[in-house]
Image (cartoon, rainbow, N blue to C red; front, top):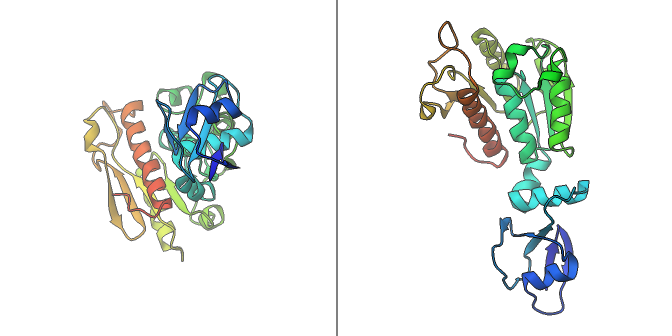
Length: 268
């Protein structure tokens, strides 16, 4: 029978148990994953099973890291998202969180666009660090993403997005994510992108300020190719700032909507 060990095919002449396989191939492994799920006990393996052997604290090679990602996401899921490309327009509170979520998922290529610099006021909700203050956001985020998952290709553009450069920047993506703060910029991006002769979906957000209930943030179909995340009401203003918890909830709604679209599912 044939099984896969860290995503490499291996032929067994006879039936074999998980712990026996570990002892033969990586005796010091203390995390054993079978078909995408950690195995708490020994078990007999079946033809086609995928086994990942991990030693806690060991720095994986690029190939081993890829195998670990496949093991956690299941092979079929990872194969689809690894070859996908997602565009993120704006990498502030929403966009930086979305990018990190998609990098952890293993999306193959991210195109991130933002003209701004990291500022101290960003640190209450955006995925940057104090020593990155003053850097272009796209450069700082690219560096952070490389530390999380070096297998993700990150293309950066430090420019202001306009109707004129929208197609050039995002014309080849599989899904586009709108992650601006200002309502007029959100509308500009969505309206102009939906006018392009593309079938590409766009995931937008509206209403995630303050500390209103978490469950008021939802994902819904807002039109052909258009998916909307948020409560649609709570905009930032005096007495109602943008804060990490609800911004993070909305960002992860958007990231999950992207994931479902890449897997052929409806995000609502």
